[in-house]
Amino acid sequence: NSTGNYFGGNLHLINSGGNGFYPNLYGTASYNGNIYVSGAGTGIISFGANTGTSTLASGKTILEGSGGMTAGTLILRNFTKNGTTPINLDFASSGKLTIGPSSTINGALTFSGSDFYLNGCTFNYDVSFTKTGSSNDFSSGGNVFNGNTTFINNSSAHLYFANTTGDDFNGNVTFTQSSTGLLYPGYNSSSTYGGNITGNGSSNTEFGSGSTLCRNILD
Image (tube, rainbow, N blue to C red; front, side):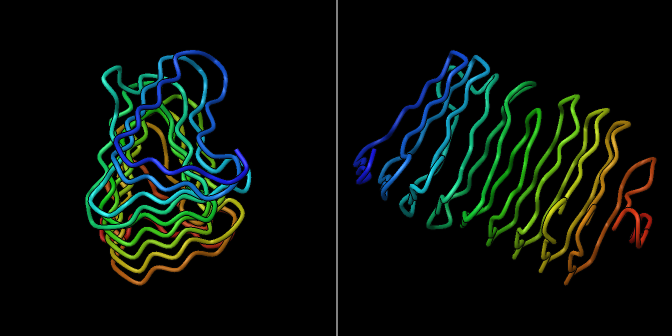
């Protein structure tokens, strides 16, 4: 709890209740095997919940355990994933994902689940996030996207990005509305876009709500 831990093999984390599971509150933890997460209750699995830092070794990834992540929240705070092995997570209808602050993800990442919150992470490869839940998601921002980025809202709720700090998109970014829920990039802070911006869907994607409004660029 105070000096960190070393895990030489695969790690299985299962939270089927409503409480928190904190692999490393303090110190530096090294994970040299794959990390498997499972959740069936309202509880969380939280890396780096206090000042602890985590490093996942090159060639390793995060996967769902045998029970799946059907509910609950996975939080990757102060978390560094090394190498190019991709992360592919499908959290079904109720699982949630929070990344950041102070996290770095190397390798592609694909996520689908109820909710996701991006709160200060550097993504160095292509990423894709799909929302399916019925509550609005407010990401604080401060993220750097160095690959191509895709956001898909397949819900009736809304996605709000950069609510506190702007995001930087250095590759192409696509915003897709697959249901009635909207997407609000740069909602409360200025964000930068270094590549093409594509908007897909039946309604508008609003950039910089309250100041600058851009609608379906490269529709």
